[in-house]
Length: 245
Image 1 (cartoon, rainbow, N blue to C red):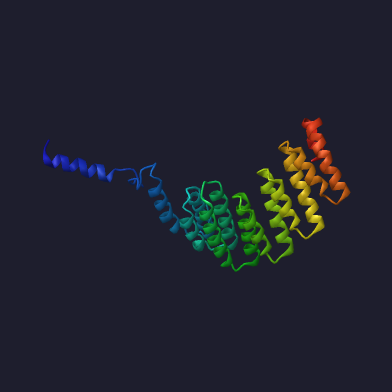
Image 2: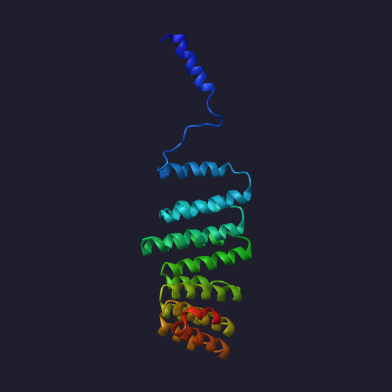
């Protein structure tokens, strides 16, 4: 084939390629390369909301891969305080699902708390602490969850954090930890609500003895009756239990 014809074919191929076509920067299954490419792409996003959201989801993926230090470095790139708080939650909760060691969890929670302390927006800061406490409870660090929640100055949010921890502890079937978290709540009405909530959680899991323990701790007579009614309904007429929910 004449050389000039080969050159002509090359010329046609180059200049008739589909518009926007580009060589893939990474192999489709190369997670490390794709993560690096995602980081570059995210830096180029103009809209603050979408950039923050992408960094948040990227941090969660890194935490799932147990790359928590790398995930935490992304928090400072996020501009919106509430998205920072949600990112702290995402990192903590995703990491808590992994088999990281206690030492690794302790180190991560210290670093997450340090990032939370940088949040200048009081409501977002309080939410960040709530999320750290929830993540600690989810990871089985009940003492850490208790201390984080107790550090919160706002009474309502502190009580909420203890209540959220109790729900997570009930979900994993730990009645003692859940009751201890609720005992730290200083509002009788909020304590009753939390006891009712965990009683329903245990009932739904057919852990009726634990559900009864939580129900008997309720001071409000109506709510205590509702908890007992729920325990009975789940056992006698489970298909109609929505009537008392």
